[in-house]
Every structure is written in C-alpha cells, then in structure tokens.
Image (cartoon, rainbow, N blue to C red; front, side, top):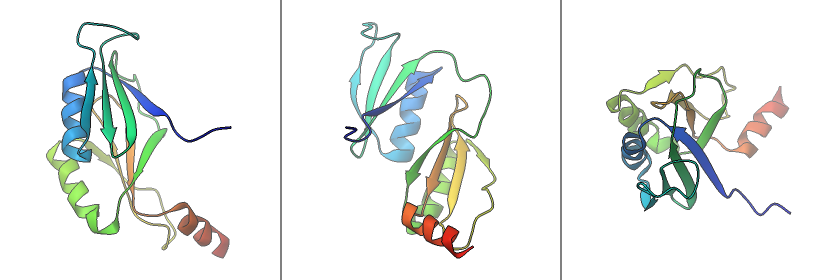
Length: 134
C-alpha cells in the first residue's frame, strides 16, 4: 500500500544556485549536503519544503522543456508575492493554460535546469466541481 509521497529528486547543473532558489522561493530548509562524499550518483542536497523532501543532485540539465511539472499548492492571497519572487529570480514564466472560472489560478515557471513548476491556488475538489458543470 502506498503511504504517500516519499521525495522528489531533481538533477540540476548548479546545486548551490538551485538551493538558493528553493530557499528564496519556498523557504526550504537544507538538512543534508553530501559535499564530495557520494552515497548516490553525485553530490546531493536534501531540502525540506514544509514536510516535503526534495533531493537535488548535480548533473546535466534537462535538454528540453516539457509540460511535465511539479505543482505546489499556494493560497490565493500569496499569488502576487510568489509572482514577484519568481520575477526577481529572473525565471522564465510561461502562460497559464485556459481554465474554467472556479478551478484556481496558476503560475508556471521553469527553473535554471528546464524543470517546470506550477504554483496553484485551487484544489482537486474545486477542479472536479468545475469539470462537472461543463
């Protein structure tokens, strides 16, 4: 039986720059850094975003950008604050997809290594409710 999400691992070109991004944007806490000791494939850091374990490992960035993404839930009241932070980091923001009125708002952006993230104000229940209206 699946008990929940264990962790998300992202391969990044500059582990320190990505750590700064997660610290600034998501108030992540660094809980481990391997430095030059490799227990896995390369240098790695473990970060906590609330209780979510994010592992970042040094390697080559993704060669192309895709719509595969990780979505974090944010409150409607924090939407503009996050948009401002993403802009300050100089990250590429892409247009939101078309949405039904009650399914929430999103900010989509690429990090330095072509990973797509979404910050979303809605919930699964709200989205399903809007889809059922159609």
